[in-house]
Image (tube, one colour):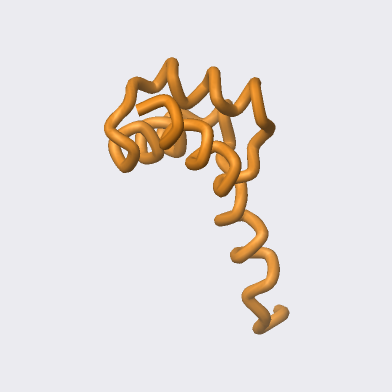
Length: 59
């Protein structure tokens, strides 16, 4: 088994819009609704940085 963290770091850099726990986490973190997070993912893709930037501009 590989001992690197590359896969984990790449996974953390994305928001999986189809996984409720990830959408809920991001919504709570940014103080927005889950629908707002899903909309941001559709708009800018699933990059966590881009989604958070989009939500920051919204709120």
